[in-house]
Image 1 (cartoon, rainbow, N blue to C red):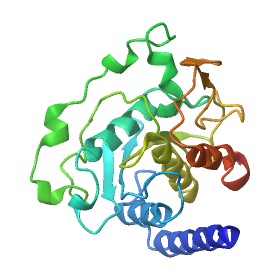
Image 2 (image 1 turned 90 degrees about the vertical axis):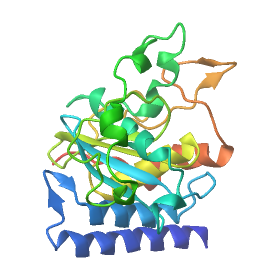
Image 3 (image 1 turned 180 degrees about the vertical axis):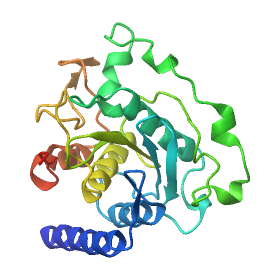
Length: 253
C-alpha cells in the first residue's frame, strides 16, 4: 500500500508538471511560481520523515537573486513565518557553494563549519541582507510579488534543505531552499521537489552516492568524512538513504 501511494504521488506530480510546462511555466531558466508551488504542495503530502508541516520554498538564480518564493499552505501563516527567510538563505548557500562540476547541499556543510571543521567560520561569511529579507507588506509574502523577488538575500545556512539546481545539460542554474519542518525532513522535501522539477542533473558531490545527498556519518559528535549532518529521526534517515533508488539524480544528456 505504501509503495502504491508513492507511485501515485509521483504520477500526480508528473501530470501536474506536464500541464504547467505546457503553459510556458519556465522563465529565466527556473520554474515559475505556479510550478514550484504545485510540486511543493504535492511533496509535502508525502511522508518525509518529519512532522508533516507546511513549507516555504525559494528559488535563486546563479547570481543569488531571488526569483520565486512560495508556501504550501493556504495562507502565509500556515507555515513557520521565520522559515520564509531561512528558505531563501538555504537557496543562497547551496548556490554560493556549488560549482558546475561539484554540488554541496546545505546539509553537507553542517560538520565542516563546526569548530575544528574544514570550513569553520563559513556561516558568518555572507550575512542575510535585512533590507531584502524584511521589506514590503507581509500580505505579499509567498506570492508572485514577494518583496524578496529581484533581490540578493545573502546568508549562509548549514542544515538540510538547500540544493543547487542543474538542468538537463548539466548547467547549474541556481538553487532551491525549503524550510518549515525538521532540518532532515527539509532536505528530503527539497530533494523530492528538485527531482519533480527535473533539475537534478547533479555532476558530483561528497555523499557515498557521489552526489549532494545528506550524509549521516556522525558518531560521538564527529563526522567520519567531515560532511555529516545530525540525524533527526530514523525514518527521515531511511528516506534519504533510499533516494539513489527512489529519486536518483539524473545524468546529463
